Amino acid sequence: MVRVEIAGIALDAFFQTVVVLRQPGGRRVLHIWIGPTEAQSIALHLEGKVPERPWTHDLLSGMLFSLKVQVVRIVIHDLQENTFYASIHLRHGNNVCEVDSRPSDAIALAVRMKAPIFVAGSAIEAMVEEPTQEEREEVAKFRKLIEDVEFSADAPEED
Image (tube, rainbow, N blue to C red; front, top):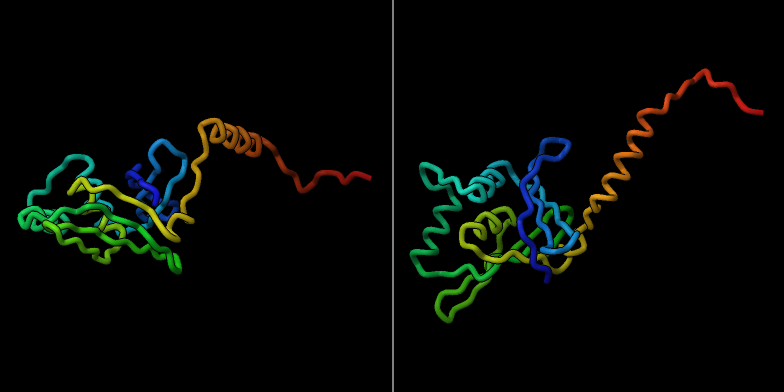
């Protein structure tokens, strides 16, 4: 299992919402496409904003807190046909259970309950290394070089 933290919420090139999970102190990240409502729920809580009325994740965390149920951790454990699977590990006294969940809901609950987030199983294979700052600068230089090159269909052929 690899522990991860939320690095941010972003939009991809098609304006789909993505939660970015990063291995602390490492370069590996995991991108999970999630719904806009779940993304907003996660982002609002990370920004410390409290909605006027509780959202679903606030309601759930409030219920668990009132019942003295601890969210031990969430685990994003599987990837099948471009769909991630997660579980929420709960403890109530000596009783421990695991509940199936969408990753977005598990993450939204984890941020509210201050529970650690882990990636395991086949989901680990979807983690990629982020480029370093130096690598990003090299790519930017290459793109600039390509943009500055003028291609002409009328260029003479060499013998």
